[in-house]
Image (cartoon, rainbow, N blue to C red; front, side, top):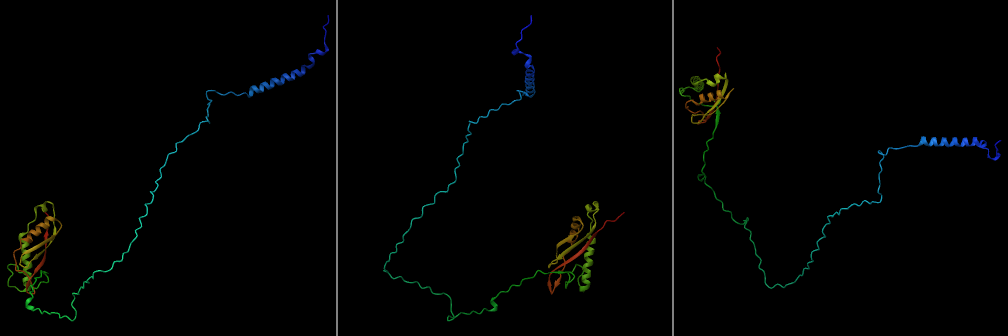
Length: 243
């Protein structure tokens, strides 16, 4: 028995069309599958922005230093001048000048010279030994000429230094030596005063001043017949002997 075929229901007639449609659908789904992207939910951050909330700020109240109002103007004083008639006469005071004029006589007084007391002031003059007229007289140099008396004075001073010379023990231990220049003054009464010294050490200076301080009282030097102070300088050598 042969099957009956309906020519209007031929399946194979549109098979190529169906194949093309199916192929396109599969390609489209494959392309969509390749383009599909996924995201990690843990890394995704969802922020919610509330745009409805309004930011309200408190505006501080600033008190400005407003200057005080100016003071009211002072009241206007209206001066009222009242004219009063003179009732009493005022006596004027006359001031007379106390200065003398040429018409007045000036009393002249002549002072006698005998009424004026003149006091003589003694000048404290200090003269160097090199220029003094009469040098101080050292004990033992009396009765000599001026030249010999000056030489005798210098010789006696040197003898006095050698006689009273004593080397300080401290200076010996510390090996101190040198020259000490001593300047002193023989006052108007013949005493040795104002002894000054200059040397390499205070120990030697003190010893030199001690020696000069032992000088005896002398006859003071004279300048123009008056006793004056006489300054004199003498060197004293402190020297250690070797060996």
